[in-house]
Image (cartoon, rainbow, N blue to C red; front, side, top):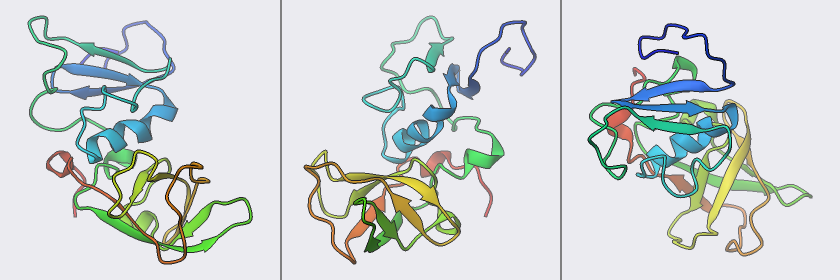
Length: 173
């Protein structure tokens, strides 16, 4: 697909996302990781956010360093996921634990939670202090089973997601 969105005759199972002069070809499983990277303040190419075989990043500026940010403005995301770039931090609290070890939290889609969102235990800096949301309803969500090294979670444990990408949020309020 061309920058203007015209078919080029090439086929791929990915969503083209433009950000400045950089083109991200994101597989469906990478959309949440891409938005998580932005929300936590990383350029989504870095670290753990996009390490799958379905993702490709191509920078069309031939004279730039790969470490440069993608440019001003935000990524051009489809309307149904544009709201995943948070306008303000999201907080949630643990409500109940399921027999499999996953947790129900008291915030959902209407508060900005999305499937695949990474939430950090509030006040904890350990790499293991994250959970990932795997199911979302309007006012609650269910996390994955925390990693074995994750700090203990009990009812009313406080979680949050930063909004360092708020300057890129394009959804209207």
